[in-house]
Length: 180
Image (tube, rainbow, N blue to C red; front, side):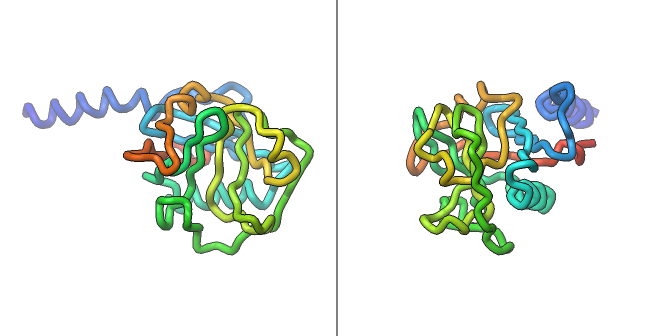
């Protein structure tokens, strides 16, 4: 009986972290909810700017590819990078082919989500980064795939490093419309 009570108590205390209300007016079909070791981050996908990249992130979220993936490269005053569900260290990508660049004129500023890539412009695959601050040197050279609408305070708490020792993780990543 005590064990059953303990399980129910644990679920009751864990539920608020994973059942937070989504921002009003959010297009749930084009929003990503990331429950991290520091809290929840929600970003809207910019399907108007980068439809192929937005679809890839939704596909990988639905595949469970991003679950328990670390923020492997987090640079103070710049960005937090994640999304390597293959090797977990920034050197891997998904089983899907690389994407052609979808560059735009939207500036890289605090809260913008961009796709990571190699020196080859058409090499984005699964990794993405969230900007801590303005990064105008990225403008027109990297794909803007989204923008944080809730949880930048959580992003600010992510442990820094390059590479990060004992990194924070994306515990669970979901398309908002898939959350039950």
